[in-house]
Image 1 (cartoon, helix red, strand yellow):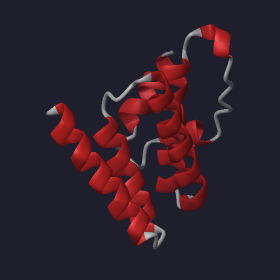
Image 2 (image 1 turned 180 degrees about the vertical axis):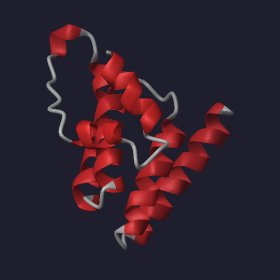
Image 3 (image 1 turned 180 degrees about the horizontal axis):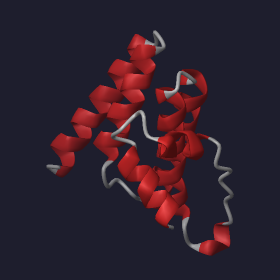
Length: 115
């Protein structure tokens, strides 16, 4: 669990070695383990790490998968943050419309939830 939170914190420092380790982490889903929310978050973090290291398409796919997993659990906490990371990766890979869509969804989420 410590590695997960360490990677979360290091996501704000793109030069940190944890990002490289997070990119290579294999995430396993076991529906019975009750950690679907955290698996979604970890998938987003992994995607963000991949995108920050230039693997934008793979990273975007991971972030989209994680966002879908979070939505399935009802977990909307920090959704605007995750969407902003997705938008950044989309913009950097030339997917401007996808990036703008992610930002529009983030703004709508903030207006709806007030955070």
